[in-house]
Length: 145
Ligand SMILES: Nc1ncnc2c1ncn2[C@@H]1O[C@H](COP(=O)(O)OP(=O)(O)O)[C@@H](O)[C@H]1O
Ligand SMILES: [Mg+2]
Image (tube, rainbow, N blue to C red; front, side, top):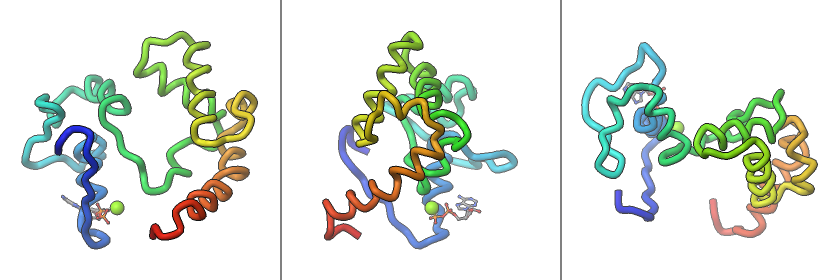
């Protein structure tokens, strides 16, 4: 895949797109396994890396936007804490700098009052803002389906 380009990958439901994506980022659950082939990221073979090394790459250099974003965050934890945990896994930042970055990210995706919102449970953020954001995305791109 060329650098900084978008590629679409399509196939009928059940064809194996999601499973292939999970295999690429090393998230196939046992007893599932990659039975053949090799996966490279910028020349580095990544399908046989130890889990800890793959964890450092995943979420920083390679990631997956899951089909249902509402299940990707734990609704019972504060949104800011979850963002800070992920940011600090990948960037060598203090808690307070990671917190500032988390608040900036909330602002970037249009969550109102991000300086307060980061202390809310993610369930509350979803309930309040997810439907509105879907509407807004739809209105700004009416021809997309
Ligand atoms: N390469 C594969 N090896 C074994 N099973 C697979 C493979 N790809 C897909 N499957 C099976 O097919 C099912 C549907 O695949 P999935 O990746 O969810 O399809 P899609 O995302 O294209 O709709 C998976 O749950 C899995 O059981
Ligand atoms: Mg799928």
